[in-house]
Length: 247
Image (cartoon, rainbow, N blue to C red; front, top):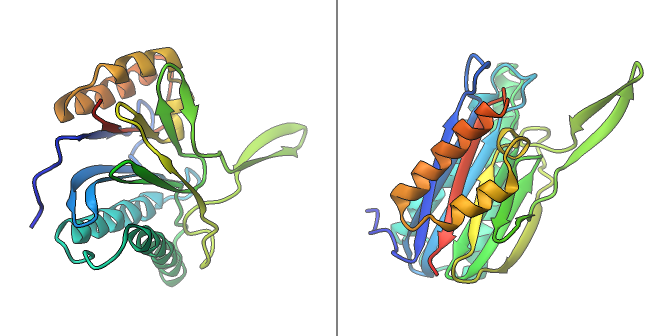
């Protein structure tokens, strides 16, 4: 049974197909809860590969898998694990989800793939898992990108092209980037697909994020930021999520 959400953590997320795309290949989830290891939250954003017709399947498989994993933690089924073991268990789960995406693509002859940026917060410890060019940033006076865009630039017929160097479903074995750190009261983590951060104005993001004091405000913030970047000309799918430690 899902336990009452902790008052110390604020979460919210939203996603939109954008102004041009026929469908939304993004998926995002941000959740908080009490687990045996302490108050916790998890966030995961996935952005489908635009050239793959069924990328939303990969995005859905990964975000739903992360949601179910956190549900297990909140239900106490992972209560025998230490914080370090719990973090490794999520890492293993993400690798298993990648393998499931790859296997489904091979089995059904579908082009499947998505980027993925995930954040696990336990107490004040955070752990990031990343593949691709979705982003997790820390919003303070300035916006600090915590993940690294895994892209390469190639020259084709005289033009410079930007390509993903890593993603979910690329192969059976996932090359997963990881980062850990300590959060301070008031720290705000923003998760987003590249559609958000390509257009968003950093000062506006940070100013509005500082004013968020509840889950309802976090949800409103995410929806407003998506509308804002669309007004600024973003045409791609857009996702925005927030995980914030109360000051």
